[in-house]
Every structure is written in C-alpha cells, then in structure tokens.
Length: 425
Image (cartoon, rainbow, N blue to C red; front, side, top):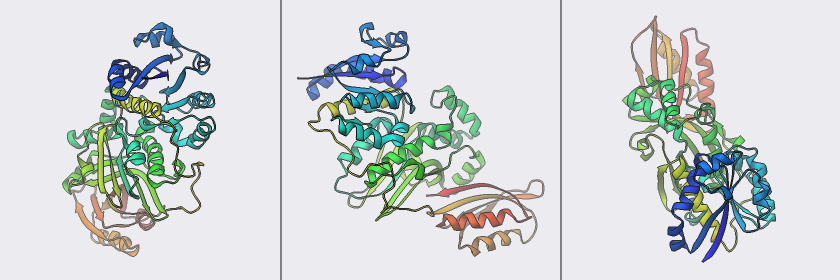
C-alpha cells in the first residue's frame, strides 16, 4: 500500500473538514484506493486552535519550515484563503517539490500561471477542484469527462451566498438587507459580504471554469460583473408573475474564437433546470457539441462538501504517475486569437417610474425602437405621486443598443427614474 503524508495549512472551517475526512475515512480510502494517507502536520498561527480540532499536539505547528523541511510530506493542502500569505506559502511548497491542493479560487484566478509554472519546474502537482462549486466535481468533469466535446456554453449558479439570499427574497418576500442578515447569522455570508454579493467570488470561479472549458486563458479581469445589492422584492415579484426566477448567473459562451464571459443577476425561465436550484446549493449547466446539455448540482460551500473536494484531489494527486497541467498556454493573458465579445446579446427586464400622462409610453417605445430594441411584454402597476411604475421585457438585443437607449431615456423629463435593468436568459 502506498504511504502518503500530507500537511494542512490552516485549520478553519475547510481545513477542519479536510482533517476530519482524512481521519474518519482513512480506512475506507485505504481499502478503496490502496492509499495510506496520513496527516503529518497541521499549520496555523495558533497551535491551540489546531489541538482544539482534535489534532495531536505533535502534529501541530506554527512554522512553515517544519513542513518544507520534511521530505516525507509530499502533498500540502492550503485552506487559508486569500492571496497572501497563502500565495507565498504555496510557492514555497511547490518550489520544494511538494504538490499542492487548494480551494483558493481568488489565488488561482489571479496567480494560476505563476503557480503552475513553478509546479512544472519542480515536478510538483497543482490541484484545485475545491476552488469552484464546493463538493460538485465540475473541474474533474471538464478535465477528465468532456474530452470528446467542445464546450459551447457554461451557465452556473456558483455562489451559495447569493443564491440563498435570492431564494429567501423570492420565496419569503424578504428585502435584500433582511435576507443578507439571515445569511450572515447562518454562516453563509461573511461579516463583509462584498466578495459574494458584488459578484467577485463568482467572477474568480468563472475565470477558472471558462479557461478549462474553453481551453484558453480567460483572465478574471476580462469578465463583466454585476452584483445583487440593487435587487428588490418588487423586481423579483414581477419576474415571478411572468414565469421567471432571479439568479446570479455566471455565463460563459464560445463560438469559434468568439468568447463571452459575464456574471450578473439574470431572470431564468422557470422551466430551465437552474431555476429550481434553491438555497445555498450550486449548479453548473454545460453544453457540449456532442453530449448536448448536462447539469451538475450539489452543495457549493461548507466544511464537508469543500473538504470532500479537497480530499478527492489529494487522492487524485497521490495516484498520478505524472502530474496533470493545463492543456492550453496558461500565461495569464488572453490569447491574441480570442475575440472577447463585450457587446453580448440578451433579452432585458427594465423597470421605470414615468410621469402619469398621455404619450409617455410612446416616447419610451419610440426610443427603444430607434435602437432596435423590441418590446416583448409590458405592464403598468398603479400610480404613486403622479408617477407610474412600468416594466418592460424586451426581445433579445445587444448590450450596446440597450445602454444607448437607456441613456437617452434617462434624459427625458417624463422619466422619474430607471430603477432596474436585469438580463433575461
């Protein structure tokens, strides 16, 4: 039986879950995979925090050199999060020839090329299944199960915090602030929820997934991003009336060398499988040119699901006779052959407050029509303070035309406000 000694950097929620799985399922993994995996060291700033998780004192350390200098440790698991000091620790581990398993989506999206180059140079592996969609094996699917296909589309609910918030707003009529407070109380949202609710977390993940799915480097900085902080229960209620459910979607498409990548709130038709993904669950909907549509669904965060993905990578790494790297030029830059489509096409939901007098609607529709924007559905609901709330659903149009039309609409004296613009799948 192959002996594998592992070190864990960080003993927070994910690190603790990883230690629990490797300890409690040791015998199962040994019997099923022929691997005797031992946690040799656990690093944290506080040794007391390590031992409080049930780790023996002789395996606890606050000194990275205790891990780097031990030749018997072949795999280092990083669960600290953030770019630093995690990035420095990983670089030191890779430089020492130790393979690294990480759940750090921000670090991978920002420094993937540098980390992979260091891994290659030193004969080490770099594995990060847990960086995207928690316990759902999306990266393994893209790398090891979709080789026969060109991935043409990737739609994902890949942030559990925002999906929980939107579910609460949809099903219980809560305001954004109320739903966020509940998410924080349950541990789904951080005290500072910016990374989740403003779409940064999903942006980092989409950078990784679209790079793997489209076999070309898609830098996170090239991804269009909007968060959910401006979403209101009224918008969600109107969407429900018209057969839509609101989700924060990560969307990637490739057609030849044309690629579009974006993260934003999206009305999803209720008949689409992604519309039924509730609470903190995640899902990714893939389209391959031969397999057609498939969807992966499961828990996107938490100690056990994320720990499960980390341990899967530990096993995968330990079984390699040769490590697996990117199958594209992973230099951190957009390939010169790739044309990034910023002027993407979508249908739109528009919510406005308009002066309650004759001829106003015709002014709006004339402006939309002048930019080639065709209205699919419209609804006026009530009048308040001489202004009528009106919503439009448009047919598919391009982003530039919609922005130009809205800019002109906002200048009209009969327009009190443009309250929401939400894309429709």
